[in-house]
Length: 316
Image (cartoon, rainbow, N blue to C red; front, side, top):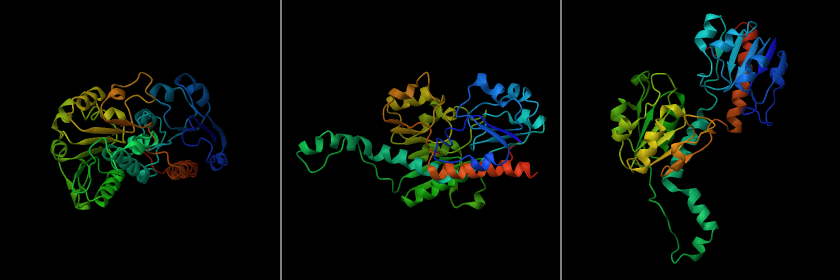
C-alpha cells in the first residue's frame, strides 16, 4: 500500500514515532502541505492521512488510486465525505482520543477567567507584591465556581466529561443536545435559549455543521447573563466573532476563553484580539502528549484494520 500523510507535524513534531504506520506500506510523511501541493503529493496514494489539509470533491476526483482517507482528528469537515462515499472510499476519524485533554483545557480557560492566575503571577514578578501595603491584592473579581451553573452546548463524550469535572467543582450542569437521550444521564437537558439564560458558564462541545455556523450570535449572546463566561474548545465558526467582541467590550457578558477561531491560523487577525477579558490559545486542547499518543495509535489501527478488510471508525 502507498501511504501518504499530508500534514503530520502537529500530531508528531518529533516526540512520537511513525514506525508502525511505516511498517504497513510505502509511507511518505509530510510535515505540512499547501492546497497547491495536495494533488501532486497525494498522486498515486492508496491511503491518505490528513489533519487539516483539505480533501474536497475536486481533489478527490483528481486521485484515481485513492482507496482510503484517514482523518488525524475527531472533526472531519476538511474532507468531502459525500464525494468520497460516491467513490466507495471510506473516511475514518479518531473519535475519543482527546476527551480528557479537552475537558482539562475547558477548565484551564475557565479558571484563568475566574482567577486571573497569569496576570497576578506577572505582577508579583514585576515587584508589585513586594511593594504592597497589604499581605495580598487582586485586580479582578475572584469568582468561586461552586454553586454556579455550567451549560454545555453538545453532550457527547467531551460534554459529559466536562459535566463530571464541573460537578467536581460543586457546579450544577445542564446541557443542550438535540441528539442526547435524557434516560442515559442525570444531567438536565434543556433547549438552547433556556440554557443561555440560566448558565453562568456556557461551554461549546458540538461538532461544526452548516446548520450551526455562528450558533452563538448577537441574539444568543444577548440572552446570557452579564456575569456569564463563554468557553469554546470545539470549532471557531460556532461563534460570530464580531458579535462576541462587541458583547465583551460592551460588558454584555463577563468574559470568554477560546481555544479555536474562525480562521486558523488567524492570518487576518480577529476582532477578539482587542476584546475585553478574552483569552485565546492556539488550538492546543487536543495536543497533550497523552492525547496525541492515543490519536497516533488509533489512526494507525484504523489503517491496519482497513488493510485487513475491516474498517473501523468510518464516518461516511
